[in-house]
Length: 340
Image 1 (tube, rainbow, N blue to C red):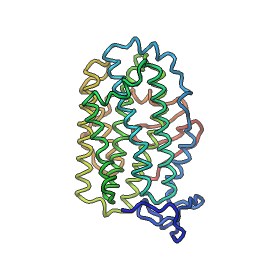
Image 2: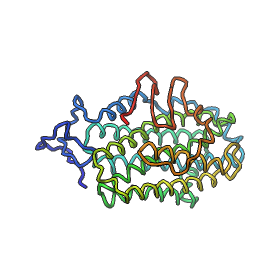
Image 3: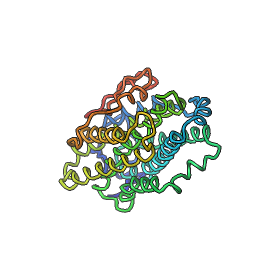
């Protein structure tokens, strides 16, 4: 698998010849002719959703954090530290590891935009940490001291590192599934711990920041689900029985990893998040992500914490966060319907 050329004047590739990867683009972003309309629609939605972390008032969280129980502080700190890692990883992964192989300019656009948004989320977490902590290094360096967190970080990064060291068509596709898991399971689970505190009237500024972040993550999830479904049509040869088995294994391992992590950081002491609820919610997310890309459900469980829906939404949105379909979800009124 070869990285695309930055400038390729000898190319005679037409719009209809464009491919997700393996194409022969000129390097010129000719956006008046689009092959993947879903990508350009998503690009416009991402632009319409632009926001900045300093728009969020974190004043009340300063006192709220001081009054959290020890268990609540532990869950908050560890969830935040995990989110910091994932957005840091994703910022670099998209630019250095995924986008160099994508040969469709309209998809290049949204990958670059997503990378910007992941970097913006890193700034958001910096604002949150600065608001609640007298020593920010305690949260930023938590992965060095907490071996459970370090283990999870290593596991998440493994598939991306496999693509970096061995860039093949199959490893690219696996990285797309890994992105779907990251955006649609790990992030969603992490957000839930913040929303749980907000449901009890605590850390409302943090919850509002997470709402903005999750609004971005919905588009990121749709992006990779559409990439996978596009490749299913464009490169059906990649969807072998071995690939399908590998994907199922990836999801099973992700559910196990995230369930263990959730139980570890809550310790059964966070109101509304028992061990059983944590595990069922993660299984529910996994099933939803699998069916969105043509796989069968693994767990057949319902959503045990539907109230999260209300915390994830803005008042001017009509968004089904758990189906990955976006409608009227932005500061404006742009409507996005994916092609699949």
